Length: 455
Image 1: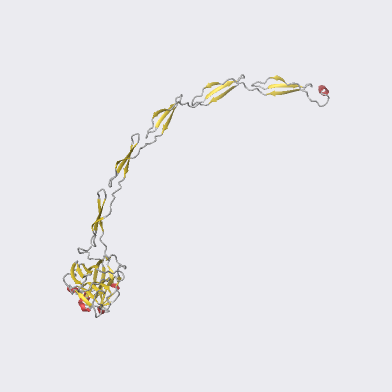
Image 2: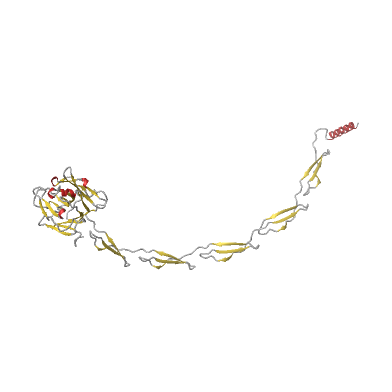
């Protein structure tokens, strides 16, 4: 029953509403909004309006903003510390804010130490809080003036110069000695072929310097160093028969001993019954005209065998004309009859045939050249004739009247050979073989190096 009454009531109300709004669709005609509750800082407000039909519409009004008062410093900020401040709204809401450090407020810079050439300057300034700040001004270094020479350098000693800074500091610098300003060389002793000379030059300071100069060089020199013959100076003589076939030159009989000697050997050939020996010559490699020809030799002692140091100048094969001017053989030394201590010098010209002409010293015995030692043998060729030497002493000479001087170039021969007419092939001779002729050196000078006028 109650349920039926409720349903009837609702239907009646609906019918009233429909009847009141025209009984169809209804457009509300609202009245003005009316504040029913003011908005505050902490709660929203409420507005409402009503239609004629009695319909009610509400809207919420946002909270009002806080109305804060003035900021109040709770803790003041310092140069290095944060501070804090706050403010309040009438509603009691409180807002707080940090205050950033103020930073230092420094005063003027004050100089603690002045800057100078070598020391940095120092300045400080201070904040009211007591904080100090320090600044450095770098030292600029010395400002030197111009160089002033104190001591001039000399040829042998360094000089000195200085410069000064305003601060009083001095800087020194060495002025190097330029050394002597030497003039041209002046010969004080002329060199010779046997010994060196001297020369000197002077400096304006008065100092003098001297030095030795080397000896003059010979036209030709071979000291037979090493173990092989110098092919620029010598060639092996052709393997010719000598003295009508009593001896023959053989390449195998020539060598260097490695001790500074040329070795020309001689041995007996049993098969051929003759002496085999060595020889060298400078033909096509060196030839000389007027001058001084010298060799240092040690001769062996062997009957029928002899060593020789000789020259072939010009052409020995021209037709005989009674003159040596166009060709000559100069026997500077021949150790013929060495078993008796003999030796000789000789000049041969006008060919080797029937027209052969000879001028000789004959066999000489004055100097013992077979004492087992080395001896020097030489000839001086000049326009005046020929002069022969042993150990620097004259042993024989031939003037221009005796034999025409030959101005033509000649080459050198060093040889060993034998002949039956000298005793070769005898038991005495064979028993003395083999033997060796040793040559220490050969030198050629343009003039006699041992004479007073010679260089």
